[in-house]
Image (tube, helix red, strand yellow):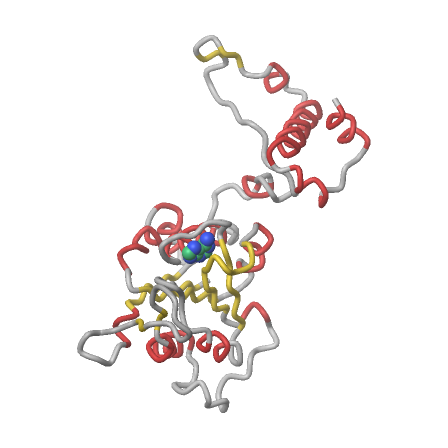
Length: 257
Ligand code: ADE
């Protein structure tokens, strides 16, 4: 997979080269390009924004600068009007995906992370201020897939933190990136439920013992106990998730208890 990100704060994205994401690059499973949007400005002030049409607070990022940057990184025509180039491939995995983090986007979920992980090229556009002129994305959608995504119902200062979060969620799903494949098959959300509690040594810490069942060696009992913990935790913290989970008799029994 290749990930490119355009931002006016490239240093904010340095963690993309660290820890598991860094190792994925060393292993040849990931390439990352971070680009300073100001490289595509044309004026002496290197402006990237202007006041919004229709009035209101804040500044909106300029379509010309964004198109210049995105078209280069995505290999699109230098003019959005030029439709001569790039018929989108039939193979979804090979089509670049332009990801725009914004609080006005669709919620970013594990399911979207799994979809993104099937792509070979993600390009992130990090907006600041009141966002990026919408015409950039409307024009880009003629050439590539575009998705506006939100990390949650709160407002960040810009898209950079969302790029880090989304990249982590996606890259860890690429086969070979995590040492142990089971570790994400058993994650929170992969079965629609929150993950239950985990324990390690010592067996008794500060007078608090690890649940007995986990030391029983009885894997059927352990699996049942873990499922029960997931169900109870989900019912308490995120009850709305249960609507989309297939529950059997044993599940109902624990939820009624
Ligand atoms: N940019 C600002 N707030 C955001 C959010 N909640 N999710 C994604 N990108 C953002």
